[in-house]
Amino acid sequence: MTSLSNSLTADAETASFAPAVGGEVRDFFALLKPRVMVLVIFTALVGMVVSHATVNPVIAAISLLMIAVGAGASGCLNMWWDADIDALMTRTAKRPIPDGRIRPDEALAFGIVLSVGSVLILGLASNWLAAGLLAFTIVFYAVIYSMWLKRATAQNIVIGGAAGALPPVVGQAAVTGHVGIESLVLFAIIFIWTPPHFWALALVKSGEYARAGIPMMPNVAGPDSTRRQIVAYTLLLAPLGLVPVALGFGGWLYAVVGMVGGLGMLAGAVQVYRLREGESERKAAMGLFAFSILYLFLLFSALLAEQGLGLYRAVALSGFSA
Amino acid sequence: MNDLPEGVRPLTAEEAKTRRKRSLAIALTLGALVILFFVLTIAKLGPQVLQRPL
Image (cartoon, rainbow over all chains, first blue to last red; front, side):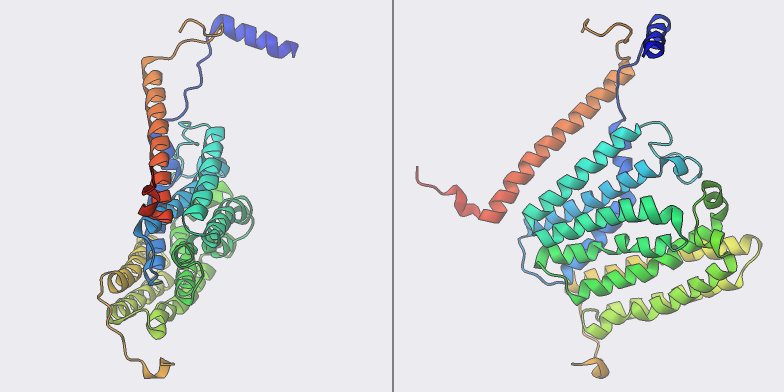
């Protein structure tokens, strides 16, 4: 205590303390990972639309907003926990906490308040199944993925991908009060899409992940094994992307997008497998990474256009008819 | 404004601006929450809730 008080006195004599000011509004907004929030809003909206539920649009809109805020809160808690490794990677070093624009305790408080608030308001607005699923999503991403899996296993983004795949399920639960086959199929598509998407980026950024000590697949199993697994997951993904057609909630438009997009994903994965040296290796991996985003966006856009804008035309599949 | 503890300097103009913006954002968020709960109440209970005998 004596040394502390001495030190404080010395500080007071030589320099004055700055009062706590806190971060800027835009830095708090950046903590919510706005681009991820947009993706969450989009996929949750599709989960709602494919449910064909009769629901008050105000309640649906508030539910969607709360799902987005909950996703943002989990992103904020992820940034709070990962600030040490974010500082070591160029992709993340400019985030508000490692860059010193927001204090870690501010981010933690912000994340907790938004998490609790979004879950409670979603429960009050729609139902407690949806609120429970949102709470599970937040805990899964912030605790299971960020605090445990990410630094422990090369399967981190495989298992952790469940958090990113849940928004359509939460969306359907919010407007119907139950979880149906439609949102579970959408969950499966995002879940299987995640490994080839992230591992394509990890192949290019493996040096940075190694410096931060994150056991991404290319760093643990090697780039060749990662390429084989990318092809394997894409072989699963391409037919899985067509399941909505077989189940009848994806029509002609979706079928065409699913087939062309699935073939595009397979072509991208094969390129990543084949091209293993120099600039062409990097281009193939970044090409697959970028195309995977477009693929998922187009799949969900097709469902939104068919189910939300009335463009649905059924595909006659006698072999699949009940 | 002169009751700062000893050794604590006043805010710079830039810091005061940052704090003001943050306070404004918190006020707007609280206002938005009030509107959200009002709209949600009407949506859940229906507009008939406003028609009460005086």
